[in-house]
Length: 468
Image (cartoon, rainbow, N blue to C red; front, side):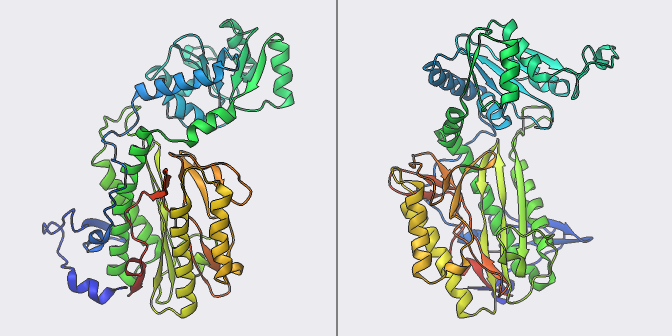
């Protein structure tokens, strides 16, 4: 259990430019509310050195060769079904299989991959044409914008109003032009009746098959290259948490949860971006997320609170530092649940149950178990400990680029765990009546023998029980 008094004894505060900041001491110059404060503390020394952690990546994103190899694997899987063309329209699938990071909006975006040739054809919105053609692209056909008028291309000097182009039919005609009018076409969604009718009208001899399950399964089981990027992101995230803990100990009840989150995010951005090779142009520094949140007091008592977090930290508060960090699209969640002194036996018990449930998930998450079996083990322990009324949700979800990803560590999910799957770690307990809750998270990697927590942040009272 750490105290602010002990912390301050160890901290030597310097003025701006005094040269006292060091990486080892977790120092950073953070400007807030018109003042500059140097945060320098001892939390980094408490981070765990876990020999089971995978080696972190030394690259900022997966190389194009990885994406081409992954598309080759996809072709092999769908080829067994007689599929001759793949259509990707889900933005996460497009990013995962092609490596083209882009912004998903109401504008339809399609990648067409012939199974029997080395090619990638795009059907995309005009505003992304330079992103497409400077990445992996055999050919790009684009419409001007949504809604697109037939013949309307202001960028070519063609100002036309009138007939609105049906962009799904536009894609279908593109498939026909490329020789797939009588083929089996795999698409990563179940087509609704309206689109099936359009497909029948434009391509009466073609057959569409939903391959979304194949795409998702490939995304669920991470390759060593993906895992290495996740580990790199989690290493940074662990340092961000050490900074946040130091910040809370130094600023104490003078700070708001908003201030902690903003300071930690700024620290995290500076920490990560100094290592990212970039020239300001597309395809470098992609898939980077540094999202840090902090909430204190009664807001911790709800799994998904809906209020804005801007509250002074007070003695007796439960406090949560949380968020998501990704590099090149890979990373995960990392939350820690603090308790500010004073606390009582009830809070201590709920904290201890949550922490033991983290260990249960870690021990039970081995290849061959089902999601339901692991979830049941956690819930059984919660019930045994008499905390049923504080349970609000399943213990975890799968983690991917999109955040929540199948499979689900839930009583109703019989998916068998496989090596390379990654999960959140969230056996949280919540007590709205007493105005507090504790919810952890991490990125847990399924291995042959157990789950591996990929962060270095401890699950200990020394880390999380603080005296300000």
